[in-house]
Amino acid sequence: MSKDFDPAVVPIRPAATVMLVRDAHDGPPGVEVFMLRRTGKASFGAGMYVFPGGRVDEVDHADGIAPFCHGLDDADASRQLGIDHGGLAYWVASVRECFEEAGVLLAERRDGGPLELDGDDRHAVHDGTLSMIELCRRHDLVLDLSTTHYVDHWITPMGENRRFDTRFFVTEAPAGQDGAHDDKETTDSIWVRPQHALGMQRAGELLMMPPTIANLHALASHETAHAAVIAGEAKTDVPCTLPKLRRGPDGRIAGIALPDDADYVHLP
Image 1 (tube, rainbow, N blue to C red):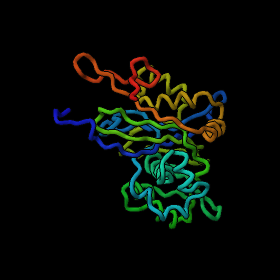
Image 2: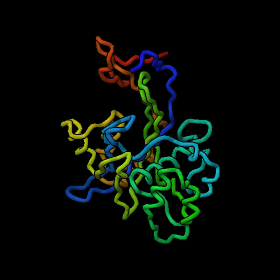
Image 3: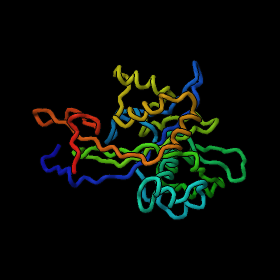
Image 4: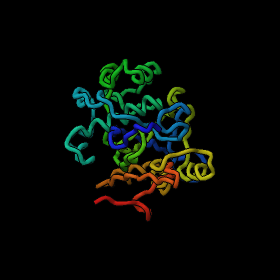
């Protein structure tokens, strides 16, 4: 890290992450969640297994997207997130990122007809040549945001050279959409039971960041995808978790402290 690095001036970027869940396809009742492995060349979270997500961009704030959103408006979305305005953009970003990174489109035809996915549309949204507004107009789509629920909130520790203010959402995967990584930002994808993913993380087989681990623990207690989504809908007053970096005697990062840890310092 450069000696000129000033952690106090690192911008905190808004981000949205969505946990796609479905009923387990084999074995006893349970939930499976879709996870992606970030490329080893990623500037943040390289090689980590994550849920689909990314930055909330200016295009997600576009006023023109509201007529294509069902079940949620900006006032209610902002209230849930505890912000003055702009909350709808986080839900829109979760839909966009899910389509870009997982190839799963959380939308439906306005006329109730079958949803026909196009790989070219996915790539065009990913590279910015097609906006979500244009995609909705092209296929007469509506985004049913009432089925996607806000469940968690994490901010990257101060001291990292990239920081994100990330809101986590949960929703049931649409029938017939299995998901696939994009071979660009992500190099592998799996549907996995949360408890199995946690076991592989402990064994060193899957690398994960603390927010991912925490949310896998939350999902592991549910026997059906519907139960996981209903539990998400029932959550209110979602707390914000801001980890603190632990440093060793040599000043290097040695881990993180969470609010329940004894060495976590609560600022007044």
